[in-house]
Image 1 (cartoon, one colour):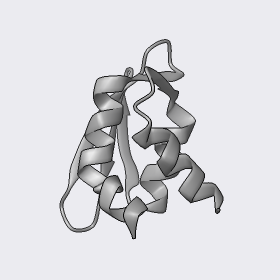
Image 2 (cartoon, rainbow, N blue to C red; image 1 turned 90 degrees about the vertical axis):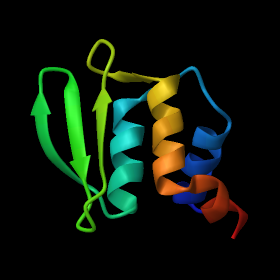
Image 3 (cartoon, one colour; image 1 turned 60 degrees about the vertical axis):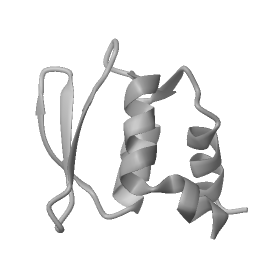
Image 4 (spheres, rainbow, N blue to C red; image 1 turned 180 degrees about the vertical axis):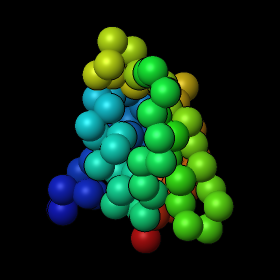
Length: 82
């Protein structure tokens, strides 16, 4: 199992908090770029027009509601099943 597959499996397990570094790693793996940061809010954009704003807690953690948004935006359930 690759590192990316393990990271996707961790996101699908619906953790309470994940690290921002893991969110950034996953978003970059799926073609997103960190467009800008305003305070604790990080905006990721994809070339096809999709975007997602991910705020952090304490500068290092991301709440579960935003983890769910990442899972939905990237369609990780389908990706993991393939």
